[in-house]
Figure 1 (tube, rainbow, N blue to C red):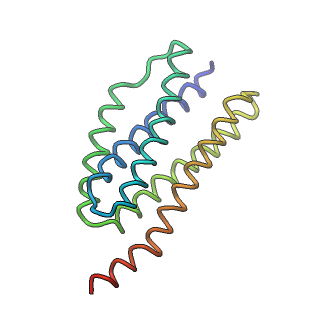
Figure 2 (tube, rainbow, N blue to C red; figure 1 turned 30 degrees about the vertical axis):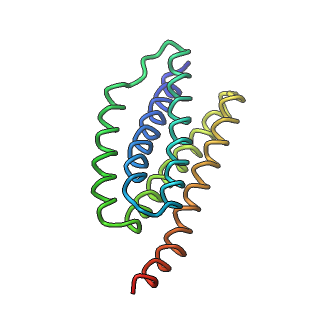
Length: 155
């Protein structure tokens, strides 16, 4: 496994670990059952992504960045609490920003893995890219439709 691939795998593990921590914090931040279910689902999916990258690294006998994981978990929880306290609109905006970063990074990694002939890895990366795109769509839709409706009903 070349150094660039190892770097990318660690980068994804770190990003996915941060997303898990951020989304976990949101699960208990709202009384909206639908909102909580969506974040529970995103946690489950993102945790699967992080676990996959950790397994690939372990299989290649490369140390999984545990110190980064715990730091990012702490940071994700802190950011999640701070943003969550300002309401679902800001939470969704930050969620979209995180997802867009993941999408950009997945697209780059997919292109890089094409030249290296990592067919199985590319397939998984494309599946995970779709997950990130679906998360972005849900977050954007929630901001556009659900939050304005909540504001109307609270008047």
